[in-house]
Length: 307
Image (cartoon, rainbow, N blue to C red):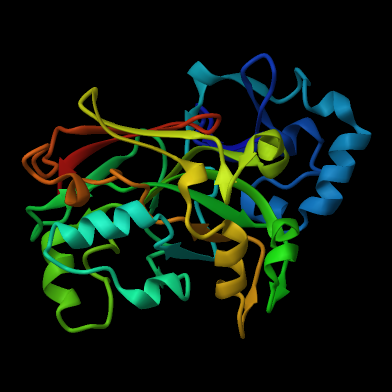
């Protein structure tokens, strides 16, 4: 299923899914209040709610509570995640980005999957405008895939990790590279270079939709990024060096993961301007439109504006 969060014409925000007629279904309205009105509440108790949906299969294609996509506005599918951890899991990206700065590969990168926490209160959805921070002149996009945790767990093993995943969506880890470059010299990690916006969307696709295309440590899903219609980035989810299972094992080591937390993959190879180089494309500027596309997960589009 493709789950969504959307705003109706009257301003009401609801959660639901896209049915086979390409209509947005308000799950709360369609179920007469049995299903929740927001995605986080659904994920927190999704096992029981999915059972209810299966027992009432007419809900999926219902006309009750259904709206043409032209009459609603898609928001981030999970606009209020409990946390966002972003990993560094594509080898090509790490190698190339470091090489562009004259740096060797870090041996420790091959020993443990690493991540940082980003601002889970600065989530943007499809078509949302992204404000370039006032002090930023080197604005960048990052083409990523992310999973949403659906089951609580602590010290989760790789082989058990899949049962803790609810689904996947496209993630754009917007980066102010000049701010990031300055603060990283201190050695504590990125913060102001990252905390202004992270985009999710347009759908949250349940993991069962991808089972048939598992490949290597990921899935055989083409990943593409375009700026103002020009393709700049091209990769594949199957190129992951660390699987989502390995990321989840690391993230849950000594701590508890909860439903509604997000795990980002990090940037795919060629997936940002920092890696491509400004000779390929300048840094993003107000007026630019960025489209990230992952096969089966849709297109996530955002326009840059001044802060």
